[in-house]
Figure 1 (cartoon, one colour):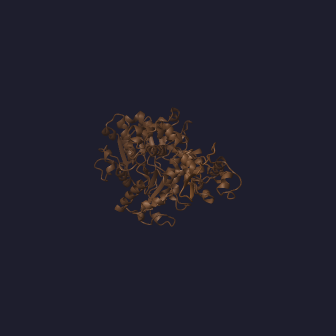
Figure 2 (cartoon, helix red, strand yellow; figure 1 turned 60 degrees about the horizontal axis):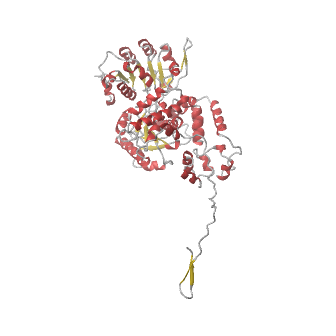
Figure 3 (tube, rainbow, N blue to C red; figure 1 turned 45 degrees about the vertical axis):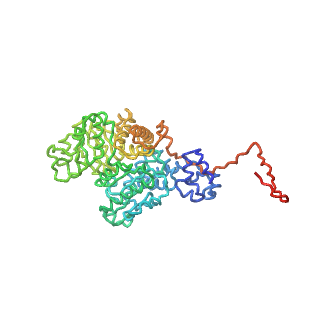
Length: 587
């Protein structure tokens, strides 16, 4: 169509890319494609030219009215899962309207499209299924993954989020039902950082499940077999990684999500120097504001939070401690108890750096708190209410301002509630959770806003920076830089309210500022491969943000140029071929 001229002239770069993608669609297909559907917002000219007249009611609506309708319908709903189904339905029909609604009420709706509701949606995935999203690759497809990627309709993918469904949040092995996690993550790539949705690809790799309930569920949608833990698993992941970079390029971002710990750590070690990849469950989030003021004197007790422990160690070293000094301040506790030398249970090789001499008789987490006397307790294992009332009271006794991070998801798996943490420490604790808790009012009238230590504060901004700068290998220092940037955006007033993170309502600006800082960092440290290097990093980053406003699908209509002077062809040249045959030829 003629609209390709606009793409070639680059009059509107962001819009032209969308128009170029959809130039072949007319009529009903325009309305069935969520990337092009505008519902009743198609103009009269678009309806007439694109074969839509009569397929829609005659009213022409603005996006404002459409958003108002959906927001009102959402407010009538009380059950989170009902809201999730309704929101995902909008995404399936009208992508720009979905992100408009999500971004305008991100504080209310992020817990619906992401934790904690996405966990519930995953457990019910086969029962609420409407339309497939993302790419499903099974172990039976090995040898053919490249051709499966060719089936994906978008060719300019920049970010892939992949799971094998073995450890979905704190819910365990959900197999292909875990697809809700990559879909939810990539929703936040777009909502928080403005990454174009057509450049995002959610993937679930199905190697079976060890969840007996799912294997007996007639609505389960994956392979009815036990999880394959043989060499075939590694071969499948290898093939997947190679196929992605072969199809989309070496700088394609591949985020591993909710793999079992035994696979997550070894796959990160295996791939991090070969591909542009990270695992935010391992290279996770911590509050750098706490770090700035207290870190040298910290003593931290973790429940299965090895990734965060490694980042904290890096930050302590940055503050002047040696690596050995930093590691001595960190204690690990897992399902088998405190991680100490001589423990009868086998120690994971990833934990060896944090194995210490036994400090005494420790039989429980409370014993560990009593003996070690930590400044901070941090949990991410999904163990449930590990931070008991006695643990919280003891933390309040030991510390003027105890740090309590109950980061497990969903809410039912959190190590403690915000109310217990604030109440049992007399409001003196610094608290953060993985899933949101309501504000807490103490008996004396003080009100605290629990911080949500959601990695959504980190991964969208980091992903945007990595995509824009062409980073090929993501160092832990990138996440350290991101955490510093996050801390810098927290005001004194917000700290006084008990916040450890900026309000979710500001997360788009938080993500963009983080992307700018990370872009500067990777270029300054020779990690970027996209040249020429942009001079104005802020303008560069913001110019790429996806626009939720509707595009026009009218073709370019124009006149040919008219010339001011008439060009007259020259007269023919006459010549003879013989006495009786004169001939002429035009020049």
